[in-house]
Image 1: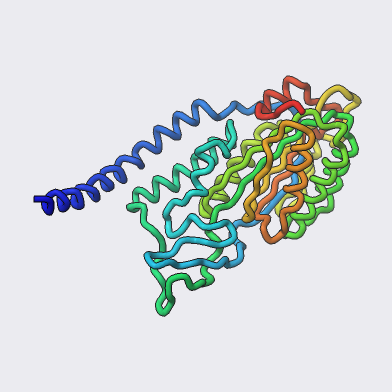
Image 2: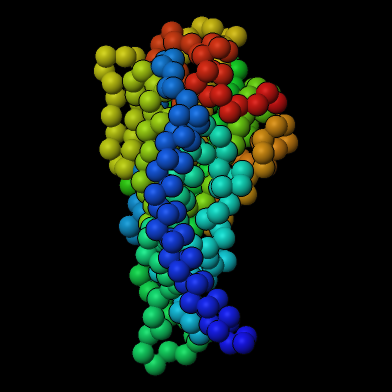
Amino acid sequence: MQQPILGSKLVGAPARRSWFSRLAPSLALPLVLVLMLTAVPSPSLAASGGRIGGGSFRSAPSMPRSYGGGGGSYRGGYGGGYGGGGIGFPFLIPLFGFGGGGLFGFLILMAVVGVIANALRGGGGGGQALPAGMRGGDLAYGPPADGPVTIAQLQVGLLASARELQDDLRRMAASADTGSSSGLQQVLQDTTLALLRHPDLWVYAGSEQGEVPFASAESTFNRLSMGERSKLEREVTSNVAGRRQQDTTVQAGDSDATSDFIAITLLVASRRRLRLPAVGSSDQLNQALQQLGSVAADDLLALEVIWQPDGVGEVLSTAELLTAYPQLQHL
């Protein structure tokens, strides 16, 4: 009497999974649209600015893979979780608060939703076939690392009397090697050090971060970069991927105002997992800057340093600062 019942359950379970797999992708788009309407702020054009950055998501070195008995899952430096189009725990982190709010959190979540939808559309498949002659648990070096990539954003609002910092950024833009990982790491280290040297000028700060699959890291980083760049009226000073540009229609320089602000954004994509503190105090900002500055060149996939204002006579008022950077917290 019990055998038919057990058989019925075994037959019904795959059917339910198949129904869910078909339904979930169709729900992903409405979810993304709702989040777009509620989470994406309108850009605020305040002043011109400068930009230093670059990187490559195509030159990641091979990373070890661990293959288990039923198909492998990635278990490199990030602790595993992604293999062959499946979805692992690290990619669910942004869904539960690590992605932050606003445009940053929306784009991180959109990348994760896309991976989940693709995994379910493909049956949620588990990993890769075990190479011939390889036993479960053996390591193999495959194509570029496809483990999770941490994308972190740190924004600081400083009193506009930090003129030396603006000068430092312009000098970096004039001489930095942004076409290599070591050059970008030097820019990141120099920028964090310059900020650490001016703790008396820190007024506002905010940090956001999330983990996305390697396959969607570049597009997510680029969208976040475009969101930050859209807050500038124009880019006066620029050094990106080895290409230096200067807007000759606007002279770079400082204003005489001392009661307004300078906003600096650090956007980092790292193969090493980052856990920036939720910046709400000077001590936490110090910790976040030191952690970002310690990212090694081999782990640094991409970097953007964006600041405003940069034109002579331009200022960033308190209202403009908090409108353009709504995630900032007063220190």
